[in-house]
Image (cartoon, rainbow, N blue to C red; front, side, top):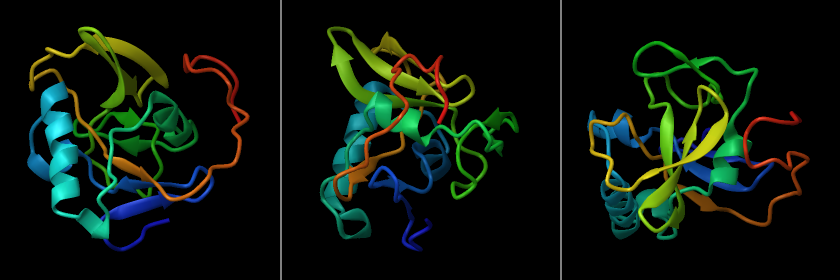
Length: 152
């Protein structure tokens, strides 16, 4: 649901997403450090009136993935993200999980989460789409975190 304030709410999973991702808003890619600074900035500015923006968990991205949606990224390739989000987005997003030198990323071409070096540069086609919780989510039937099994 488009909230009309630069955010989109997923009522099933009780998450509010930034409507435009980092690439759409800034016109460039972001590093892991840049993604985290961007979230801090969203909180400092109280974007849409909130101060609890965060990077999504890989499962949040997995729940956002919609195989039936065929939206378009910055390069006019298909990404499986709801049409409530504008065309021209990135296709791979930083996620909050991290382990040592790596952090999770989620790819909306392939419905796959994977680890990537946190030292990846801004030109590595990485973006971020901050999210915040709006309440307790309903349980998901999608149990795999690999992105390769069961569809709802």
